[in-house]
Length: 84
Image (tube, rainbow, N blue to C red):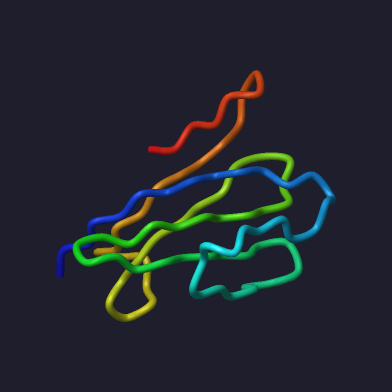
């Protein structure tokens, strides 16, 4: 399975959900981790909102397990967002 995706990683600092009307789907994984997405013809665009003091992990797998998953790590340093 091939996933083509882009990730936007805004960090919310106790502000709650700040979303635009352009997201067609969303899920709150817990009170501190929300995912928003809109599928396109050939890709899916995601926004991940996480309240954290460190980093976040974000990934996909066919069975919900980490082995074999496509995943990335995101963080903020000096007010700049990184995701790899």
